[in-house]
Structures are given as structure tokens and as C-alpha cells.
Length: 444
Image (cartoon, rainbow, N blue to C red; front, side, top):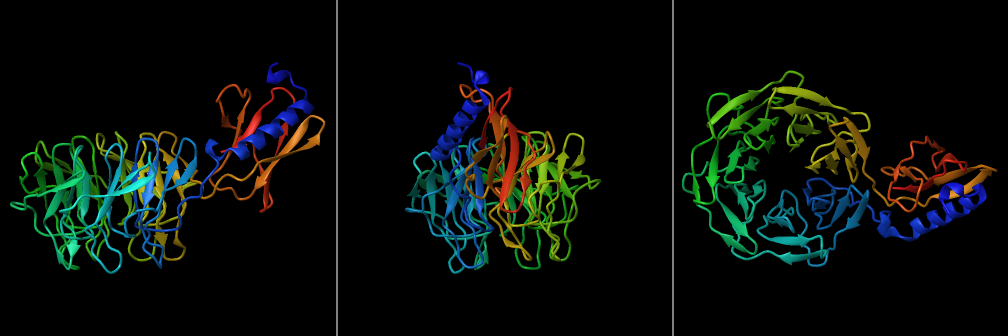
């Protein structure tokens, strides 16, 4: 018997069973809260999940985290068994099977410890010995087979580092390395690491850099020259496949909304236009989509926090504004990753609002935002409202969850229901017809 041939009464009964079944099977995507509020966490993309870990909540350095699956719209808690010490300003990379975190600060100690997290096994394993001296404000990149950390601060500014091939550290030459610094950026080209900018005191900012070749364990050329951005820290850097793009940042007195594009093949710089660029800021995030750099959030240093941004196309040297409709609230010290389709922003801080455990998914193709859930989807209830109609209801506000429909339970063709719900502040309600075409519903 086809579902379309069911009577409204029988359909209502079956629909009630479907809702009960969905509520009884949290693995179907309706379980798990987001990690607690925090800033200065790290985030990596595994190919299917965003892993968030560490950070600070105003009173404690955190060693907790969570895994967000955007396809299922769910959060899964990460185990804290054998997890490393809570920290901020650490580095994190994804190896293809594990997340490696290393270094950072826990308010008292400069950390030289780290660990591997496997989402498949949901377990932590301690990283190998022989690590560089503890530090924070360093950079961390993954080269395809090894993690490289460099620079940072530990009582003094540093210009050394280390290469980590799970589970062993290798020495890294400092001969020819850039001068000591922290708050610089680093990108991996696949064959070299390029570092740029930073500071070496609270009043001295740097506008140079260097290129490190791990295959040769040497540094070659200082990244300077005509067209390079002015000295700064708290800027961002992305690698496009052929260029490093630097943008934003500050130098103690000025915030920037300019930048530069460095071509290592030509060893040359090109400016990034400021026409239609986002406003002056630092502490923003930047991701590379394959064709554009998306910058978002940050602050201007005087109490103005942002929830806007821009998409920069290096081929045309042009900016396109990122919509603020449905965007997360203004913030800085948040994290952002690129999934291959969307930018996911999460966490962060603003002075007036404190710490966040929410975020959003931004689709540049449609220039739209989708809120991330902070709690599991509430139970969906159904009650008759007439001979051929019913009311679906669920607890408000249910941020980050939406109603989906499917006409045939033998398929997985769930789509957004597109029905406007009323909200009295406690409960959301929507009326549905039990006449053909009939649908089944769930909260995702």
C-alpha cells in the first residue's frame, strides 16, 4: 500500500509513530549539545565534521570539545579521558585521520605538550617526546606528512620550531630563519612554509617573513619587497594554490582593511584593493574556498565588534559583501573552517555579550546563513486540529533546527518543509494538511 493512499486518520496514526521513532533514535541526528561557551578554541575540518577543542570561558582553561556534523546537523561530545590540559593559543592540524593539538598557554605555563585525537575511536593519545620548548602565539601548519610549529613567545620571542611526524619530533634549522616573533601567520604551499608579519615587542611590528623548505631543512629568502603590506600582527593569511593573501590586522595604533598577495614563484607582492573591502579590523577569521577568500567578524580595537565580512576574488581583485541577514552575532576570537561548500563560524567573545557557544554556516553560492544548533532537537508532537489537518508543535526557540518533510518513508528524500511556524515564546506550532499530497515530518 502506498502512503499516498492512506486515510487522513491512518496517516495521522502513522505520522505519530514516525515522530515517536525519530525521538527514540538519537543516532538519527537529534542528540548532543554544542560545546560550552568559549573563545580562543581551535577548529579543524575532517571532511565530514568540524572538530572544536580547547579555549577559555572567563574562569577556566578548557580541555573539552565537540564534533559538529553539518550533514546531520548534530553535535557529538568529545571524550575528555586522557585529553591534554586545557589551554588557549595552541595550534591544531588535521592529518587525514587525526587532529593533533600542540603548545599554548593555560594561564600559568607555556605548554610543550600535545596529543592526537581520533574521531573514529573517540580517544586521545599523547604525542611523542623531544618537543620544542613550550610557547604560545606560534604558528602551526600541516605539510601533508608532518606538522611544523614555529616562532611564538615564552618569556622571550622565538625564532625556532620543530617538525612533528607522528609520533616523533625532528629538529628544525634556525639558520637563515626570520627574526624572533609572535602573532605572525604561516601557510603551507605543500612544499614550503611561508611565514609573515607579527611582532617582537608590544610596540614593534614586523612586515617581513621567510620561506622554509622541510625537504632541505633550510630557510630561503626573506619575504619582503615592493607591494608588501605594512608591518602588523593579528592579521590573517590564506594559501590560494599559487599565492599567499594577507589581510587586516593592527600595529598598535591603527587597524587595517588592506593586504597583499605574495607569489612565491615570482617572489613578488601585489596589493589587495580596499574598494568595497570590509571595515578596519583585527581578530577576524579568513578561509579559502578554492576561488575566494572569505573574511568575517573581528573588532576595531575600540569596542566595536563585527558580524559582517567580505569575499575577495584575487583573479579580479574585487570584494563582495557577505550578507549579515541571519549571521551570528558580532564577535571576535571565534573559529572558522571551510567544508568545501560552506564556511562554519563558531564560538568567540564580545565584551558586552560575553562568551558564545553558537555559530552559523555561510553558503557563498547563495549568500545565506544557517544557524548552528546549541542543543539537541526538541521532541516533535502532533495533534489533530480538524478532520483533514493537524498541528505540529515543538519547544521554542529550537535555534539551529528546522522542519523537514518526506512524502515516502522508503526514501531519504527529506527536504525543508518551508512552513511558517507561530511562536509564543514557549512553543512553536505549524498547521499541516493530511490530504494528498501527504508528507511525514521531522525536526533536524
